[in-house]
Length: 203
Image 1 (cartoon, rainbow, N blue to C red):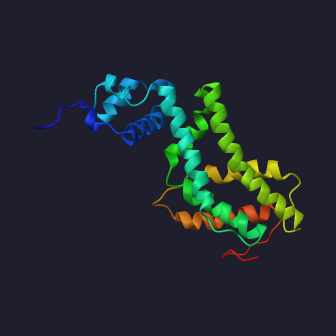
Image 2: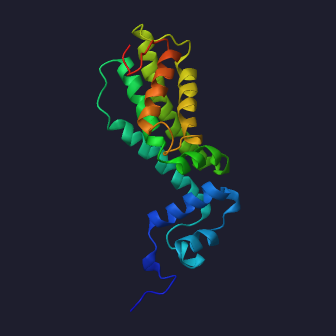
Image 3: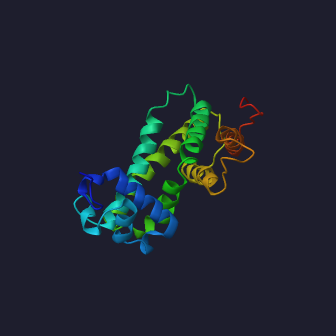
C-alpha cells in the first residue's frame, strides 16, 4: 500500500535539517515557520514534533553540526612539519571545506543572533576552538621566526574572515576552480604573515 503524505516513515532527521537549512538560508530564520519546514519535507506540521521540539533546536543543531564537522575534518588532516606548512594546510582546508557549503556558512554567521544564550554559548565555544587552532599555528610561526604577526589571536580572526568571505562570490562555473581560489588565498595569507610565496605555493 502506498504511503500517504504526512506518514512519519517519510521523515528523517537529515531530511528535516536539510529543509530547515535551505529555508533559513533563503528567507531568514525569523521568517520561517515549522509549518513551512514541514511542507518542504512533505508532511503535516505536527509530525515534525516527533523528531524535533522546536525551530530553535533546529537552528542550534545546524550550527553545531557545521562547526563539529569542520573541526573533525581539520583533525583528519596529517600533522604538518612546521608552522608554514600548517598555515597553508589550514588555509586550503578552510577554503575547500566552505566553498561547497554556502548555505551552512551563511546561517552560521547571519543567524547567530537568533540563538538563545545557552545555544549561542555552545556554538561560540566551537568557533573559539577552531579560531584557537589557527592562533596556535600563527604563534608557533612567530616563535619560530617564520611569521611576523603582532597579535596571533587578532590575526586569526582577520584570516578566517578573509577566507570565509570566499563563499559570497565564488562561482563553480567561474574562471577559477575551488583549488585555484585556494592557491590565490594562500598567497594572500602568506604575505599577510610576512612570507613571500611565489605562484605555485613555494617560498
